[in-house]
Image 1 (cartoon, rainbow, N blue to C red):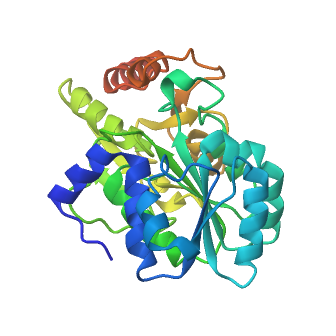
Image 2: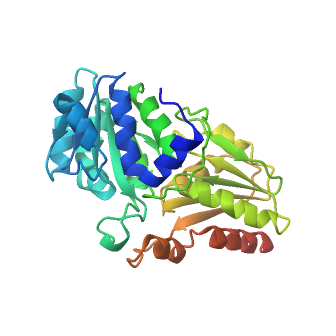
Length: 322
């Protein structure tokens, strides 16, 4: 197990999600038996060192995600874990049928990794944005979906997935300069949310990069007398319903995600709340039913209302309307 320190957290922040993934897989391979596959993105995926140290456990499938999942299924038939990586929309939507049959239906031990989920692909535009991936993968029966908040949580998530014998989708958001949420170790368990901040008025549930933004928004709200709790819901499926239930006494439940609000974290929480007789209203913040205009990552976050300032402003407006 990799030790988590402030120095390492800062290093992983500078490296970003993809390079941290590569480091985590490299360290994990020294203790666990698994294969790693790439759709011609080894260097971009941070897998260069892994490929050099474990060439017999690395395979490049070329720009052919559908074939990659089929190859991964063959490798996983004996129960061996396989990490299959590519850009988010390609590994979830281009290869959706193969993921559905080989992972969902056959329950093979494959972990697909969506690189550059959300809006971090920036200038490359909507062909590369990971907007619908969480919704697509949540809809596949038997699929686990995880979206870690920062480098330290990516490391713990990879370690957990190495010992997890079910198919899963690892959704990586953010790039170099990934904001730090965890400077010390956390109790990471798949399917178990992590409470980060207490607050009596509203409950904010976030995943991925939006965990840091939610904490910053909670600070802005606190300065105005509104106290918000923040929960890191790193596992979108299976959702930690018990963590959601602790927020039923709040004035408002807010979900924040760097993904479409249709079918993602907000939908998962709403599905859970639908069965509750007494519950607060829910505000879903994320990417609306649109394709954002391409630009810098910061521009896209602002355009989609996913900066700390805009998150706080939308929450204030929602509270005022109650």
